[in-house]
Length: 109
Length: 111
View 1 (spheres, each protein chain N blue to C red):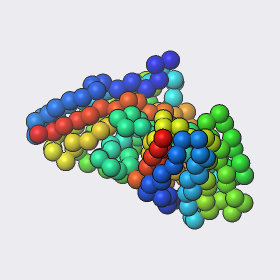
View 2 (view 1 turned 90 degrees about the horizontal axis):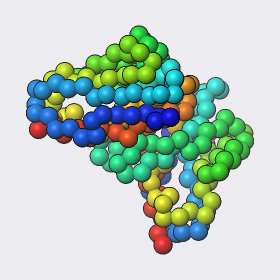
View 3 (view 1 turned 180 degrees about the horizontal axis):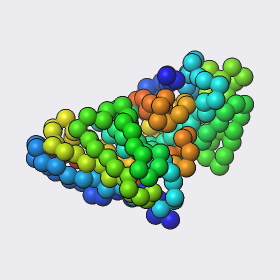
View 4 (view 1 turned 30 degrees about the vertical axis):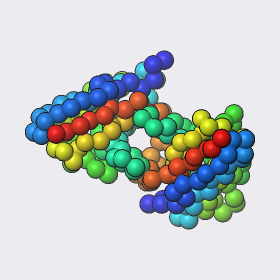
């Protein structure tokens, strides 16, 4: 079971870069790492997914070191609208993935 | 594409009543799943399906039934509602086993 550990909460200010790190020490060889964002009263929304090294899209970057035992979601220049809960998931969605409590990010003006 | 749709948005039930939460997707995804989310917690998998006619249990299946007669629809049935089933229910679909698309959720209150 690919267990993940992430900080419960983080605070930031508008315009700053935010990095949320997730630990997954027992990640399996074929597991992907996926991050979701959830706003209050909405379902989670896919942000980014990666397997190794670095992945970047229009919303975020995902950094994965060579040992793949952790990953870091990077949100550039956050705004108030980035206030949400961010979930890190590893593995097969039906067999291994668990949505933990996630990281509650609060962006302040 | 409408994506994943869920009905109703909100429902109040009395203990012992039954009801069906509806979920539909128009993306021709093979995989569909149901989650529940309690206040301040992450999502927990109830049941999932890897294709029409195939379903399996997730982490918290007790008290819920599912069926998958078509690719598009994946209803969740509460057989005899209990206060412990008060929660927000999310349906999701995916073409693979990593990235899921979630519906807007159904808020259920069992009195």
